[in-house]
Every structure is written in C-alpha cells, then in structure tokens.
Length: 95
Image 1: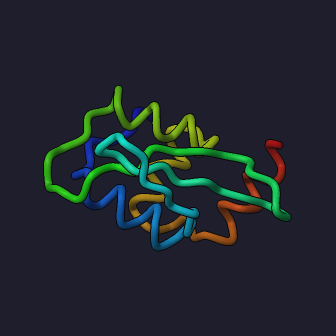
Image 2: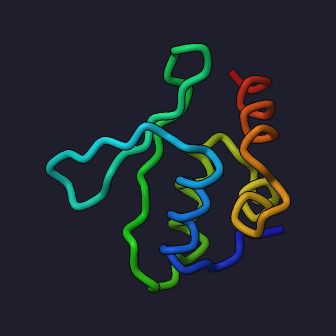
Image 3: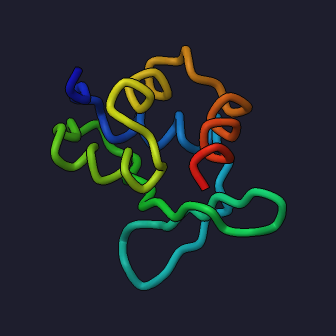
C-alpha cells in the first residue's frame, strides 16, 4: 500500500513522540534526528517542519526510507498502531 498523505506537523509529532531522536539543528531550516541503538547511530532522518502543509507520498517515502520502514510500517507509525518500542525492534532487526 502506498504511503498516505499526512500533514508535516503530524509526521513531525509522531517521530518526536514515539522515536525520540536526538535532534540537532544545523544551518538548514530543517532539523536532523539521530536515532541510536546501544550508543551507535543507526538512522538519521530529516525532521519535517511544524506546519500543516500536506507531505506527499514522494517526500514521505524519503523519510520512511531514512527511518528504515516500509510503506505500511510508516503509515502505522503515523496512524498510531506502531509504537516506539516496536520501531526499535524493527530497526534492530534491520541493522
């Protein structure tokens, strides 16, 4: 199933709330989130801005890929069935 269109604000909130990446702000208007397992950075993702514009499938696909999630897993992360601990189980299996 393709990734749904979500407001950027919702994607941002769910990533920050569930995955709790270490967020670093650079020169870019977008922050980067670093996701670590056992002290080692396993994923790096661009954190969407905090506005209500829709993020289309093509852009969401980039974020899903950075989080090492397939389309259904990304939709579940944003729509709530996928919680933080389960995300880390998936990530641990993929690294």
